[in-house]
Image 1: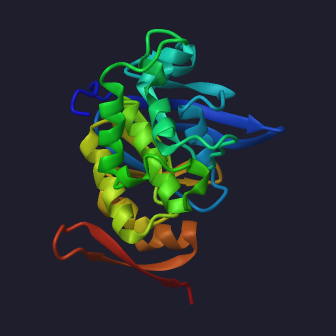
Image 2 (image 1 turned 180 degrees about the vertical axis):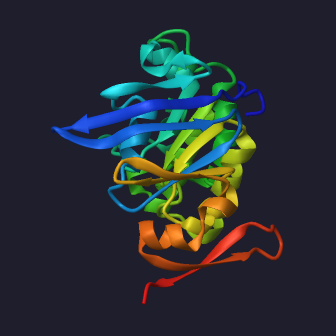
Length: 263
């Protein structure tokens, strides 16, 4: 997938989201520069997933805008938006038992010339390569519904990558994955080259793999910056209700956290 289009700047500009009369996201502004991996961290119910749903067009904000390379996302035609943004939501469902190869092939639909057009000559090769890169090539002929949670997650990441997006939105992409696949997937999405906006629960994964972090609490950004600046004990005690001791990874130098309950 080396011919993937160039990454785009992503800007969330004053976005608020109301659902059932409740404001879940309140005037959030953030920026991810082209090719950056930007993480959203915060406790459960803080608004991370709601914000991401605006970025991949599952929700329309009550106010504010999502900009891709300066273009307003929600003003784009659906096919054009799908060429620019791919998403891995936290929740996914499949009513029909497609094969893994068919599920990954769905990532190529935005690139076809029309609704009835078949796959191009190179689509099969792209899909096979994406499955290989996530360590799932051996699953190609399996039914998607027969897979374990971790296998499904890797297949869906392959589908997002084969879409060749300029912006990749990931909501807890390491869910269901063992530690080796967690590390591989996060390295892979960086290597693939798009701008990445991801929500992560694991603060050490966020610290080790993100260029910038935004901390969300009660629908608002309460801190932002490089991981080493953001992941400091007082903030983590206030937002996450944990005692954190930052240390430096002996090989990478990235900040890592030793976590315990507050006394």
